[in-house]
Image (cartoon, rainbow, N blue to C red; front, side, top):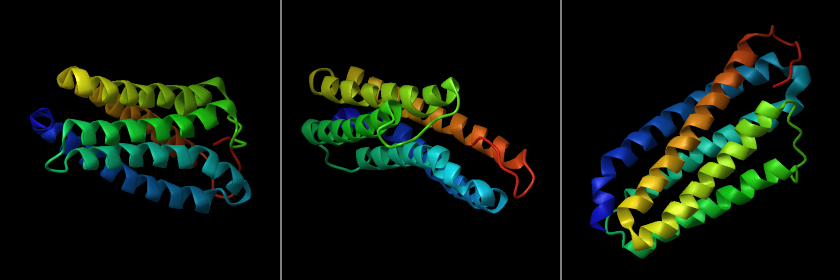
Length: 172
């Protein structure tokens, strides 16, 4: 698929950014676990979605750099990840996974915006069958949206971790 070759540098850049930021999240996880011993149950509520969103960007961009993709295989990769992401973020939105976000901004950042980003992936994947460049542009918008939401969530978590003294509880 010649259209994917034009996007190769973008996918490589996004995968490098996601991999680097994902590695930094594990540093934050370690710091959070040490600082929040009494509040360990709250850690997965906020950290897990962020790690999953970074991993989604990394996984999809790595898949799209495979050589010899056909339009159909690229579409299947994009749509499959988009649908899986919609199911995951949808369960967060509906509370089906027993998560309780403390604020409306948390619900936006951890469920609504990621759902929209995964929706862009599905829409872009389907559109890439008919108009590849337009479809891949929507896929890029979805990838950038997931990366931006993950960075926002990471920043929020990092600020929360460093703003409390070790052993003291907080909201995230």
